[in-house]
Image 1: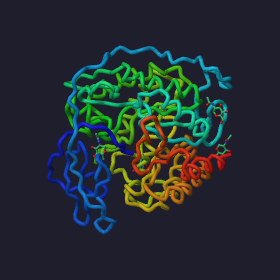
Image 2: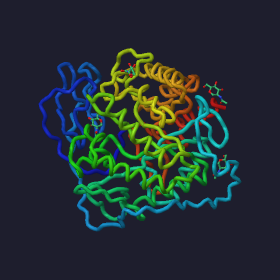
Image 3: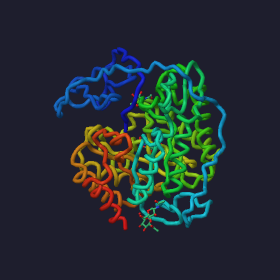
Image 4: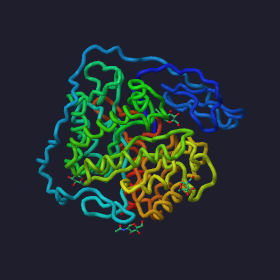
Length: 443
Ligand SMILES: *[C@@H]1O[C@H](CO)[C@@H](O)[C@H](O)[C@H]1NC(C)=O
Ligand SMILES: *[C@@H]1O[C@H](CO)[C@@H](O)[C@H](O)[C@H]1NC(C)=O
Ligand SMILES: *[C@@H]1O[C@H](CO)[C@@H](O)[C@H](O)[C@H]1NC(C)=O
Ligand SMILES: *[C@@H]1O[C@H](CO)[C@@H](O)[C@H](O)[C@H]1NC(C)=O
């Protein structure tokens, strides 16, 4: 999912080619064509993404040409490339059942956490590492623990091209062909606290390393600093060197933490129009690199699950148009489990179509012998009636071993956490339906 962000802005350029059905046609940082093929119109989804949809479908007007913002930065915060060695305290007084060597793992087609093999429920909070008040982080973690949302997926990246004003969190500055990791108070120390709090509350984290989308920098931020194109991101030597250095810096901080569920290559990697070998090669190289640094934790991709023959109805998500082949990538040795997302509103499919999407992935994962995580799913209205059936299907499908809805919401010291329409706030009736009831079903 593309999340709302504080942003930097690159103008939308002009291009001549017409965009294919369901392709991107606008959004912050997007420089391609804004004209859809005949019979299709460019529909605004959010500041970062507009998409070609059938012109007969419910039209919401605007073709996004976003503008604005861009921070004029002054002071540089502590930015250094040195890497702090992991020291998140394990001083918590909780009577840990798990030994320190008990890392989350797969057991056949299921996940095992702290020795318990079961289906697991989880959620997403892209913003938790960007909070500056430890009490807010602890509040969220304690609500997750109490609710039995055992898996939390967070953004482990926050890339900028210019240093923001002091007090604004960022993790890496990409500028003029140089990458500088921010290990300071408003840098990776914020992620350190997320891991520390997760350890204290028995929450297991999925931490990812880069965004396909431009929010919080993403691949486009690398391209802005190093040159090239976004589809060339996966093969550019300088970019991949910086990306790997960033991965190494993050992993070294938490390599011994039992609060890490898995390392994740990217959020929703895509390479539109590319041969599937481009992403396949990148997944193979990157996941092997991660395993060379840390053989104890699991590794996953973070893709949307696109490009699947099993159960295919030929609709857009089943095709390889975004450069992904689900089973090909899941077959890679150094990938421990599969990930897939579900957003019918963005994909031109119906809500009930989602059930087939879930069973197709379960079947494909079972055939490969690795569990799958329904890692993101959401709608912007009627959450309970649409998403609860998907949860039921996921729970009943062999090969689907966990789900994490997009996205968790709570009331922080600064007010409500971000709402992109998909947010399920702690304590609401939607939360009862999609968390309390779901966890009860899991048993
Ligand atoms: C986690 O939740 C359980 C069950 O509600 C509770 O007993 C335990 O104290 C919680 N742990 C923490 C650290 O909040
Ligand atoms: C993310 O995916 C979209 C859709 O394929 C693509 O247009 C865009 O260029 C990608 N972003 C980057 C930075 O690669
Ligand atoms: C993915 O790759 C496998 C192996 O090459 C191939 O058999 C399958 O048809 C591909 N899937 C799609 C959706 O193209
Ligand atoms: C593992 O998963 C399978 C299929 O989803 C399920 O039938 C089985 O009960 C699970 N095993 C355990 C120990 O949870």
